[in-house]
Image 1 (cartoon, rainbow, N blue to C red):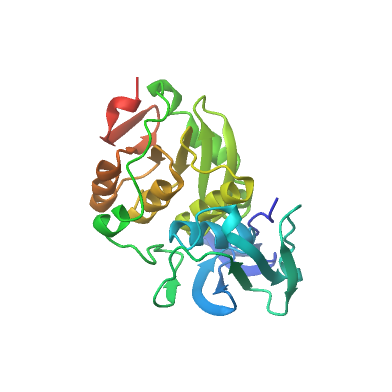
Image 2: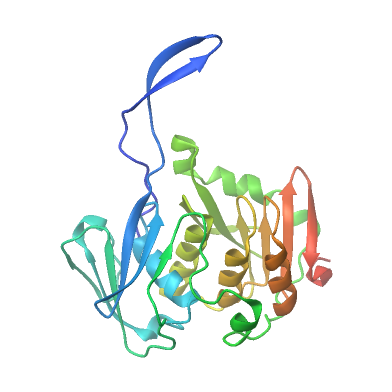
Length: 279
């Protein structure tokens, strides 16, 4: 397994105002650092992320951008030994000097972006930015499982229960992959919710688990277009967000036959597209 997200080192000195008075304290803050992604040794992207699971993040991002379509497209990956990444049976070479770099070498480039792109922790749209361009690479989603509506409301609490770094910093989003019975299969945290999704998809790439047509994706915060885009690429038929969806997210979900759920909290939720998957 790749390294999990990690906060910054302890000891950030703060001044706290509470009950009419000031006090000094040490606090943990969520780490946000740049990761340079290289493709065949050439700079491709700078990703603002929480360090940890960098291999998953790189592979998930390249999969979402259709640069690769699976594990077999990857020839080898160069990464710094300081990243602490290890994958049994995967051609990983920990020989890069820079700790915040990942260099992915591929056998068959399915789609080579015509420019480098910057991905911030706030926005994850890097290549395909319209429903029409996304449709060139992806077919409508498979029907997937029929889900009992009562299964969904408890999922945010299960997601929150697995957020170990959030407990320390209060500053990270999460993406969790669940099976059709509501069992948490994996969870990743990051300052960017789309980064957390990329890490989940990257793990599926490594495990040969795509398309994830029998799974559900639950994300903290809102469901923007980039979340739905990445779920479409991974073949995930149902996405549920604790917050609101955007109009483009709804349009994309409708175009690909995805069930999109928003405001999943306190025993209720809204369905914005394809209610037929919910019994």
